[in-house]
Image (cartoon, rainbow, N blue to C red; front, side, top):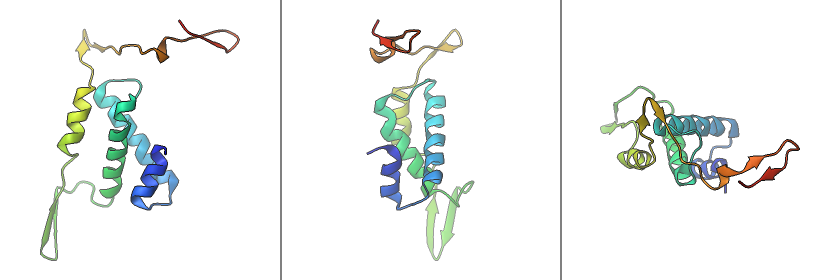
Length: 119
């Protein structure tokens, strides 16, 4: 099941464009926060969680708390466990730059004819 299908099942939302936009925003946030160029497979769940949080917060943007009918709600930016996970994959900056390790998949070399050779 891909991320879009997961969000559709979790939310019951039929608007795929909206969910795709929320997923793209969540991916951008994860990449920016972790200083990475690709999302590791281990962070896919975190991307889905952030997109789901954004969906659930729609209509309450900018609010820190709300009281209705004797019930009080408060909103956090994101749960601590999301940041705990992101912090484990956050790259440190050295000399103003963040460096990612190459994985075995990234070491392949594309040839001029479009084929792929492992390096």
